[in-house]
Length: 184
Image (cartoon, rainbow, N blue to C red; front, side):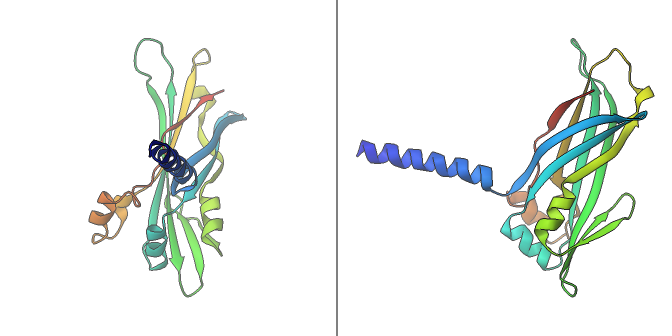
């Protein structure tokens, strides 16, 4: 009897680990910064895995707003790290049934891109290249800096009838933890 419980417990742990690795959510795969001329830029790869309920809502006309937060802080030993710059990239993911295309709209600059599949759209949404963060002159040459990046589905911009469900459902509370990297 105890052997069955141990095996069942081990199987349950294994299933939880597998579901957390391959389940829905947002995962920051990598982030780096580089100095291009006098401008620090950010590159990031983010994986978006949408739950079936969220995908169904998207197919039925619900537009999804995605916010990507980027922050830069100066490291200090004794006090809190002061913020240097904070930025939010705002995107909207929508599905157009007449054209069978997924549309990503950059809500900051108005640029739009079209994709044939949700997978292609999520890949494009999660690929950030050469995002201009700040000028080199804004940083002290002898200080250390840490960048932070986080992505989340903004459920406050969902249609009002859907918001109560989204606030209480883990399928809708999609967000990554903060990802930190050293800015060089």
